[in-house]
Amino acid sequence: MAQLTRWQPAAELTMLRDRMEKMFEDWPGVFDRRISEEGLRGVWIPAVDIRETKDSIEVTAELPGVDVKDVDVSVQENTLTVRGERRREEVKEDETVHRLEREYGVFERSFTLPNSADPENIQAKYRKGVLSLTVPKREDAKPKSLKINVEK
Image 1 (cartoon, rainbow, N blue to C red):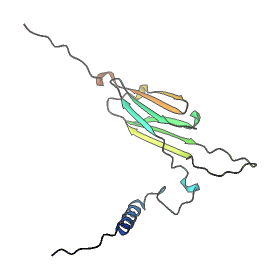
Image 2: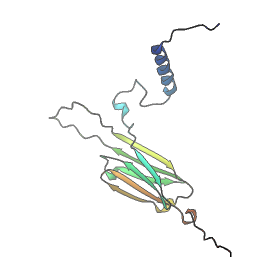
Image 3: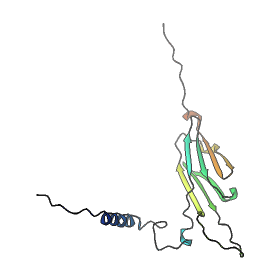
Image 4: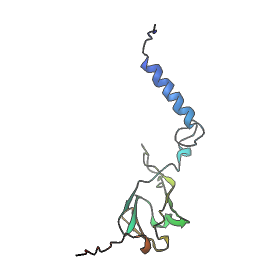
């Protein structure tokens, strides 16, 4: 006969939290309670959209507050990497800071390009804190239409 046990949701949540902490204990950064606020520097991960058209792959990254001179875009083999830094504004002597919630620090995002990409001809634009990359497709990788001859 089955034994009935009392459901304890708080105990199950505690077990779940303990399992999550154990899973992330080797991953430095956000989940480590022992690090200071200064140690969180560099956890910022900018949002990125990737779209594909018949002619290109479009990568758009939101980099508000990042100076274009602090952004580097590179391609090695078939990996596109965007890296840079958003610097914290200096606090003046005569002002009191009540809250700092915006994230600052070094960031790096890498994406694997498909074999159809032509990394030699990437175009980059930066406007109002948005980085737009256009990765054209190789001509031989673009879809081709064939004309069908109808026999009578």
